[in-house]
Image 1 (cartoon, rainbow, N blue to C red):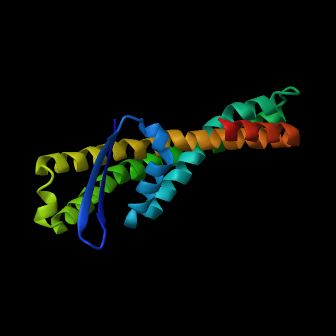
Image 2 (image 1 turned 90 degrees about the vertical axis):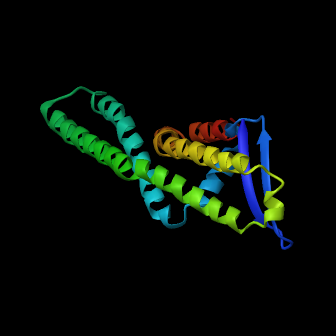
Length: 195
């Protein structure tokens, strides 16, 4: 169940909007991404570094079978083997470095974001007049803020590990098909846009 909390200043005072929707978070994917990005504040640079590292790690992991396929098309002699080993080592180093960046900076970022988000919402709750707060049970509001924060941390992990992998896969597929045929690339892009 999707739970959302919104604290807004409507020039007459603050309002707390708490609503539940039976639709899953997948339906609200772009809304959730916009919410996360809007509330990153001082963590935006680290967030983008981790997104780029996720794309690099996924792209490097996908490049290994592509390199093996390209180099073994016409047979493998000693010169090609040396070149293949250098490329594979470079790709593996890129993948490991990007994965280290995500583990070192991305995973703590999710928890720092979570704590920062809780602090922001609790500060906004402190500014609410008591008459507005009296409409909702305080434990319910605190519970909603904590649930929102804990679910957002999982979504940030998914952005760094899963969503960036999908972007890298789609990018590599478009690149490979574009090198073979423009018509095939147009068909692939149309299919991605439809589904």
